[in-house]
Amino acid sequence: MTADPVDVLWELEEPEDEELVEAVKRVSEQLRRSVGAEGRDLCVAIMDDHAIQLLNEQWRQEPKPTDVLSFPADADGPEGAPIPLGDIAISLETCARQATAHGWSLVEEVTFLVVHSVCHLMGHDHGAPEEAAAMRAEEDRLLAIIAPGQRRPPTPY
Picture 1 (cartoon, one colour):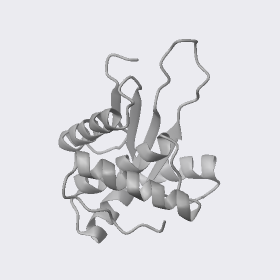
Picture 2 (picture 1 turned 180 degrees about the vertical axis):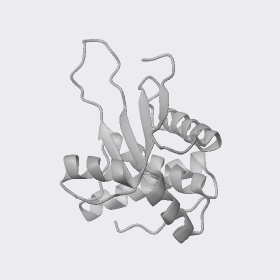
Picture 3 (picture 1 turned 90 degrees about the vertical axis):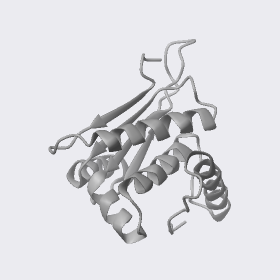
Picture 4 (picture 1 turned 135 degrees about the horizontal axis):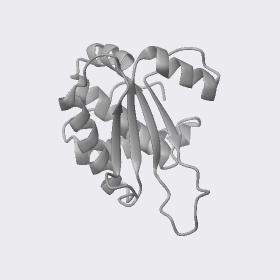
């Protein structure tokens, strides 16, 4: 584990939004505790639509921007070493559009996207109806812990 178990990388041209970065870090740390992953490192990269589109095309063969991508850590590491939780990529541009559509602040939207991604990193999915129901329930549980009163946005799953 690194000295700082949650890294937030600002990969945008504009100056870093320190308040947003601190919110992402705080939410990520709370989520690590809430899912029993205190000893596992997490990295959240905040980027633009172009950068996330390149990742989306490379890893999902979807040549379009998306709001968030989750990359679980590879379990093959040195014996006895803690396995990182994984990496999250968030497009701030898409996130801002969605926040406006949901009537939320940018921090509320990012909070939900980090919750959603951590669920994926912990093995949840939303492909089949039963999986989607379980993932929605876990998202609701985690939101109640880290952002009491924040509702879920409408999702396609």
